[in-house]
Length: 483
Image (cartoon, rainbow, N blue to C red; front, side, top):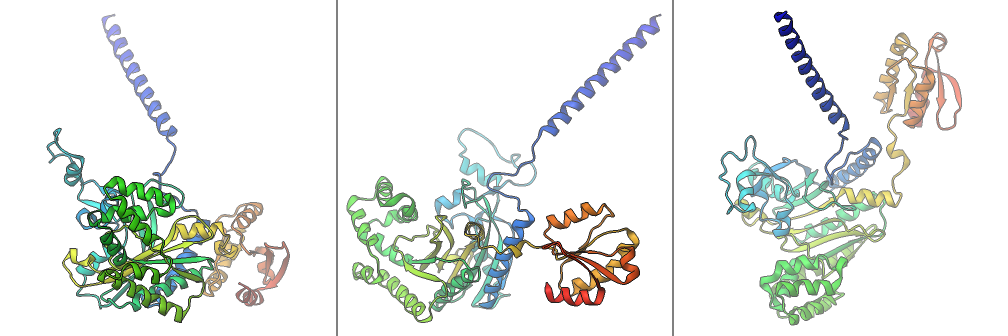
């Protein structure tokens, strides 16, 4: 009797344990099933239809880059944090995505109330995701200077990351396409870069493109005349927002930083300049300012002689491009049809490689914002329907033996550049035709037992629904000429 009670207790204990286990199992299962798949804000998935359109842009842009003699490189997604910091100004540094050190990143840190977040970041994060492609390029040039020929012309098409607030046309992860030439101070490079930019947008058939141009030497001279040299970064950062917030708000912003009202009146005189000649009168006593004006005149004079295909070039005194590394001419490209911000931008940088130990190596580059270019083309309906087309010909699968008979024809079609496939499973014809319809396939070929015995193909034109029997050789000739 005593043993029975013990056994009952053991059994009850096991039942309770099993019950608790299953409760925990189902609780975990319910939790996992309730998790909705998401991605971080400011990042995106791209469907096949979107990727076909993006690849259309990539292919056109890359073709122009190659046509101007630029060679491809790639750099890592992660750089050492010290490589990136201090190159973009305080505002840019705040937007760098830091990467935590591997393993137990807090193990060697003594935490106390006096430690600032900035100091803590330095101790727990030694790497960062690249903010742009220009600074990594400068590091690349210095690190690989014995392997490259100067002047070095490179293009680079990769993702970059910024810890910015996501909004229309602005993402935390996005794609940049850069061209840079480093190792020359010749202003012919500026002229070439404007021509290249015009060719890019012309090849994509994007109308009403405006290329704005200014010179950082002019801005430095303006701030010097204002007597506000200590506030240069504050002024150019505010100027970069003038199109969005207006002059009065720019004025209030820099006055709050410490710039005098009289200095703001001088800045307003500069902002009223519509031509380089008007600007020159204000800079007559500034050696640096006059140098900037001469550079602008050289560019405008030569662009006027050459002509642009579809863009207009405009002097814009308020263009500042707040990145610290620019030293000469700066560019920004906008679409006049859409208020979406700049779709490309860049400029001359004389000192960027010096921070990595290579002095006197001037560079010039421009970055094309593929994501914004995509939005412009999408909203202006500039994508051809053919861009998203993937497969031209599909063979219906009537079974393993019939499918094997199709393989030589598939091989011949593909060797002639015709995108072809066979449905992988022997499903009902209705399902296979629905697949072909959804993929917008041009022709569906039925090559079953009857067709094989007759040496014919049954071809269905998916665009008009017509159907015909045709011998294999005739079809091959027709389809190669048609597609």
